[in-house]
Image (tube, rainbow, N blue to C red):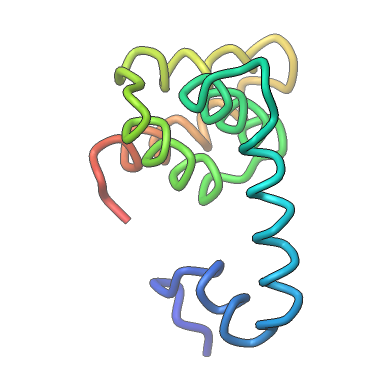
Length: 106
């Protein structure tokens, strides 16, 4: 039985260290892209993760957005922005995860 409290990213890094290292290089290259500040990038990631119906991703990016200076209202707005794009179910599934991430509940 899988431990649902495990951080899936940490499992990925442990089980696939070489692939994880290359993935981390990609993330660093994306972070270095000019044109958007770090907070805006995290808010966009929250919106994308909501559209993909990935509450865990929303939670993690909400934590990162807060560390980059995002306010609770900005994080909630990034989720709710999806209401007319990807539907009410995605928003309902991801909004609690966004709040948990903002509050540091992992």
